[in-house]
Amino acid sequence: MNSMLLQWLQAPPAGLPDPPKVPESPWFWMPNSASNFASPIDATFNALMWISTVCLIGVAVSVVWFCRKYRATSREANEAAESQMDHSNTLEITWSIIPLFVVIGFFVVGFKQFVDLRTAPRAAYEVHATGQRWKWGFEYPEGLTHPELHVPVGRDVRILLQSVDVLHSLFIPEFRVKMDAVPGRYTELWFRPTKEGTFPIYCAEYCGTAHSDMLARVVVHSPEGFQAWVAEEIRRIEAMPLAELGELTFNQMGCATCHSLDGSPKVGPSMKGLFGKQERLAGGGSVLVDENYLRESILEPQAKLVEGFAPAMPTFKGQLSDRRISGLVEYIKVSASTGQPVVKAPPGSDTNAPPNTPPADPKGGQQ
Ligand code: HEC
Ligand SMILES: [Cu+2]
Image (cartoon, rainbow, N blue to C red; front, top):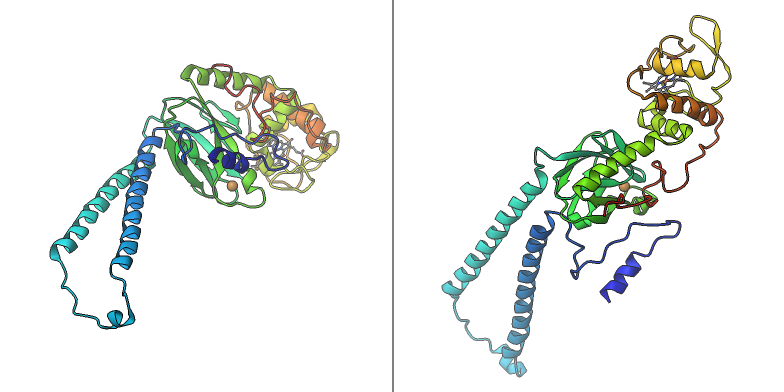
């Protein structure tokens, strides 16, 4: 019954090609245990639940039993109430003291777990996670951005969360961790994965229309597998077709925050219709927008200022590989200027894909 119910709950919503699957769990109502937090948290939960269950049954049985024992057999018997027995000190002190210690015990255990949960170890591997309507993005210290969270097994991982729009919440049931992503500040969560595999990530804070599609996955690799995955991703990104690499770079490097694609000026001029036009420069004169002008604009933004704009663009000299610069030039030429979508590499090798697209090889070929 349980697994049928689960199957129904997990049925993919229409239009979602491949939602992350919840792996089979050996527990009745808990998901798999895949992090250091799973067993202590489950133990506290189970203890609380069983104590509550025993108390519930005890109270319910007593109610029924007393109803029967002290029921009035007739109307007369009911009305002739007699003086009551006085209270019992022993009984009252017992039923106050025992629960007091039980509750204090739970407080101590629960508080300790809470502090653990909220205090990331100093030497943790740090990943930035960004919530955005309606996808998660993860940034790794190796300079990699990816729609999935990849981590090595057995290593403390600290996630620094932020949101670019509204409240979101990163929830990994198998790890028993959840934290809000709040616009304008960082929040954090940490865990140590204990099991290799792929586990779903949900957004647990209602954030608008496609909130329930805001799915991603966490892939736990062996330590060597993780290194190989990072190296492979970096290699793959650098080997992307130029225009695709350019689009990725345009979004990653924040070009999109100052340059629109739809013709409206932001901090800088829009990229629409840019390539091939005669650009008017501040202080008079004009220049033909060709590949060399684009390259110069990225590396020496102040060399030729566009009329009507402040010299607000930072230089990207030394920050981008030659291939990424060529990618940007190509992207602006074939796509940003014309409004044509970038022709993507074959599916499975697409880093810009939404989180629900399965990776070419989820285990990084290391299992
Ligand atoms: C902080 C805002 C800002 C960022 C970030 C920024 N730019 Fe600019 N950009 C400007 C401004 C302002 C101008 C116009 C003044 C000038 O010519 O330097 C400009 C001009 C340009 C031009 C010339 C446009 C024209 O109409 O002739 C190009 C091309 C360009 N930027 C590309 C990029 C690329 C590619 C990136 C990312 C790698 C980027 N910019 C990042 C603000 C920005
Ligand atoms: Cu959300």
